[in-house]
Image (cartoon, rainbow, N blue to C red; front, side):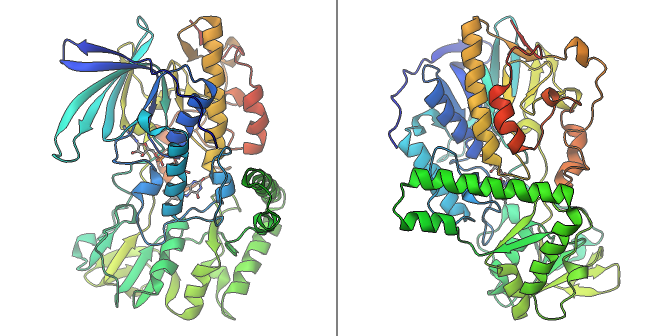
Length: 512
Ligand SMILES: Cc1cc2nc3c(=O)[nH]c(=O)nc-3n(C[C@H](O)[C@H](O)[C@H](O)COP(=O)(O)OP(=O)(O)OC[C@H]3O[C@@H](n4cnc5c(N)ncnc54)[C@H](O)[C@@H]3O)c2cc1C
């Protein structure tokens, strides 16, 4: 892949006399160097090379989710032909480990010379929009990795491209259970995995049944004495060999990798669309088939009804992928087991369940999810007024009523996140070109007269998709309306055509 020509860097510097901090200006400022932020940088450089930009990242390197999570086995749960960018072929197993995803992102950065635009150790704390200047001013800190000391930093920008993800990276979500303090062993959250932990010969209890638990259990089963997955309610799992036969066949035919990527991607998307359609139209049939496949992987007589039959419809939560059936192999070998029950209390030696079973453990791993964070815990103001995103309505799941010149990249849940990051990349570049053609400096989503009485609801319809971390925090999220312009559809197959065709002069976007 040939890197695009270097754009001239058009930064300005000034000094903030009140704080004595140098203020740098960029046309576009991207917060976060995860898969969304690196993608945003690529699209901007590719589609609007005249724009100056910077990516600010609080961590020491790129990767976001794939840098933060270091628990054993950490891997994607969607296939990399669709989780990878559309512009960079994926050459590896469909379900990939974090180190492979990081290596892929590193190649994207190097091949496109994006590194010179990324500043690590920059944590943004506040963002203030001024309509008299038509600019955002961001304040934060830059930490010196060698001394650990911090200094204040300030930036101004015309357009804020928020790629900070959707959860707090520093700490995962752990519910408060009675008696936790009495437990004499170690309690660990996978998001803050202690690299020096030694599980050999230990009894380990993993609380949770999502993708993280399903990854961890087989990954540690070989090392510890025994691992028990304690789940309140089961999850749908899909077990598949971690290969893509179409990709392997095309490679065998020496088809160029760009073609292979595109063909395999299209096929994966078509297959996923079909599964999604079937899940909505024939949920019982899909459920029965998923359970039949799980039964085949487990020993004769295993209680699939109790341990692997969820209460929700398939696709009301993400389907968790089990590459090469590793979770089921762990259970079949006797090194891993599943208990479906609720926690009553923790005690000195482990956990007592509500049905009265005592589960002893040396280490308890709380694979209980994330703590959702709306826009990176940054304090936003618009013309001096604090922004409460819960009071705003989203424009196509990207922008927010009353908040000018700001886009948030929020991907899909049922399909790979990056599919939407790429679509939003095109959309933002189109919007920036449009604004320049109009000669305007400000774009603000605003309800049209015909939207005045529109019904609003939570960001995601719980009937449609309802994982715990979203349900816990829906009250913090922006609202959705009852028209496509005011929703995050969660439907890639609709948006792949709708977003590129969306009329930028539909009256929802007010230009000044
Ligand atoms: C374990 C795990 C597995 C997953 N697997 C999949 C999968 O297989 N498929 C899928 O589609 N999705 C998956 N997801 C969802 C996943 O988070 C997204 O797909 C994607 O990685 C999000 O990328 P992002 O760049 O938007 O955000 P993140 O990866 O969260 O990165 C955001 C970055 O922004 C930085 N940042 C945040 N706030 C600030 C601030 N104030 N100042 C400066 N920097 C800031 C963070 O440090 C971070 O580096 C998974 C999530 C987890 C936790």
